[in-house]
Image 1 (cartoon, rainbow, N blue to C red):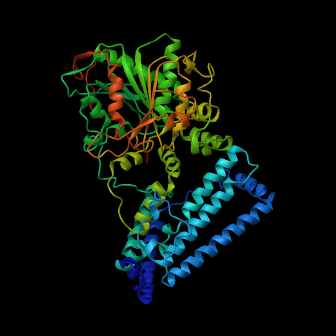
Image 2 (cartoon, one colour; image 1 turned 180 degrees about the horizontal axis):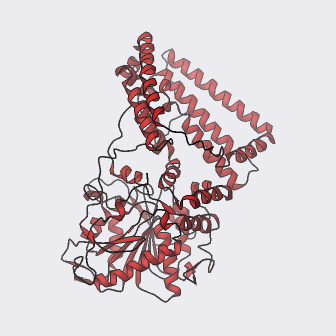
Image 3 (cartoon, rainbow, N blue to C red; image 1 turned 180 degrees about the vertical axis):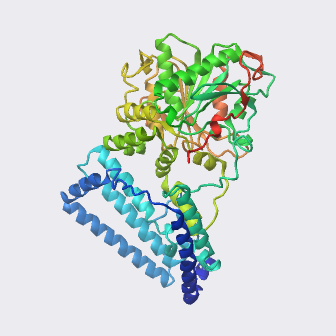
Amino acid sequence: MHEHSEEMKQIDPVEFANTMQDIATRSQKLVSSFMERQKLDGKAADSDPLHLADAFMSLTNQMMNNPAHLVQAQMDLWQGYMDIWNRSTQRWLGKETEPTVQTETTDRRFRDEAWQENVVFDFIKQSYLLTSRWTQDLVGQTEGLDQKTQQKVDFYTRQFVDAMAPTNFLMTNPEVLRTTVETHGDNLVHGLQNLLEDLERGKGKLSIRMTDPDAFEVGKNIATSPGKVVYQNDLMQLIQYSPSTETVYRRPLLIVPPWINKFYILDLREKNSFIRWAVSEGFTVFVVSWVNPDEKLSRKSFEDYMLEGPLAALDAIEQATGEKEANVIGYCIGGTLMAATLAYMTAKKDDRIKSITFFTTMVDFEEAGELSVFIDEEQLAALEEKMNKRGYLDGSEMATTFNMLRANDLIWSFVVNNYLLGKDPFPFDLLYWNSDSTRMPAVMHSFYLRKMYQENKLIEPGALTLAGTPIDLSTIKTPAFILSTKEDHIAPWKSTYRATQIYSGPIKFCLAGSGHIAGVVNPPGDKPKYGHYTNSRRPKSPDKWLEGATYHEGTWWPEWAKWMSRHGGGQVEARVPGDAALSVIEDAPGSYVKVQKKD
């Protein structure tokens, strides 16, 4: 038997009981101290803000309409339990057997060797996997539910079975049990301390630390690419980066990041900074650094983000470089804004943008993935009421929604690490950025959720009017590079692919590996993490596109640079921030990006 399994056998039950008693005594002091520092506000929370009761009541009714299916499912589950029990019994008797339920290779919860080597923990693991898959299959195969209800019950059933994993509990996690014995329970006491600190920081709501917040400082060891802020207004600062080549492409490159997060995801550290790399490729790079809005900006609209964002930036870039023409990148909601902006500019006969690149961008929201679970009339009305009271959506609420899309990786792994193992989170630049949340102005965010996610108006010609001008995405003829990522939970690639059938100009679609962030921030190197797919054809079906695509090892960055070079407009002498009509306001990364969440 493996060493870990032997350790599990050697646990002294008396010593373990004494350890647990000691933990209880020390924990009581910590909890008492925490409670003394808390003040209850007396407000009653909505008992069902997501309106799950109605969804699961509909599910129950449909299940009861087909009792034969339910009975058969119960018999299948019982047979599975019996099979696991029989195979486990054979293992206890020293025989080799194949598991009833195989663990998926991507499931990192059960990587501790005791889950395989120890018969008891293998039995627990297989029983859980059988039950969780049976539950999700039963819910997923129930007929008679409308699409929205089916999607909601599927999503929250998965949240439930993920939460109930044996890895999330002390007595059924072999790694936690070993650590508890080895440290005489110090891990659980330290874990409780971490839990109470997270509750205190979240003012009673659990705000899980994913990384060491003191390990990074914007402008010191992340977001350090040299440059200057050369323009600012209420909504953004415009950063011009210092050149690292003697000559540059004539047309400047403007990057419009999402305002749901901060721009420095593209400038984390020197080795993985897309911005620094683009500068080294000979681009004069400008980046919009969005403000972190408070209640004073509650009336700012999607239209304002267009006028004071990319359109104001293009005017400023002309002053900074003397160039009217530019190439633009839009990332996530920044790309959605750029699609709307291009349609607006087309209607205005404004052709300053000579190429457009979209990073993981949705414009057709008909199949918006699991984020649609949070978009129904009841939830939107409740969200709008909350936003209208304070003027904005708090960034932490948006972050929680995104984390739920990958709960095992972004919630439960930290519960185990921080609270059960009692470890401090590892310093990780990407997770620091993920925790550095931003707020959404009430008017803008309501428009975005209703007109795009709920009503899907952006793809309807003339359905939306910006600055008095009806827009139509099909009129856009600007050459486009569309980058999507294969495992994207926020902007599913098959939905982003629909843009290839909307725009009228030449389009290059590229599909990268990994997800919404890691698939984009994937720098060149000796050991490339993720590859990418390309296909010169543009069939209507995304599956057909992938079927005919060619796979390439390594990052898509050089592929994009090669495409961009055809739209660069030739070479000119490198420009230095502040040398033209716009004077320097402050050093990059500027002050807007350093504004953090409100207390």
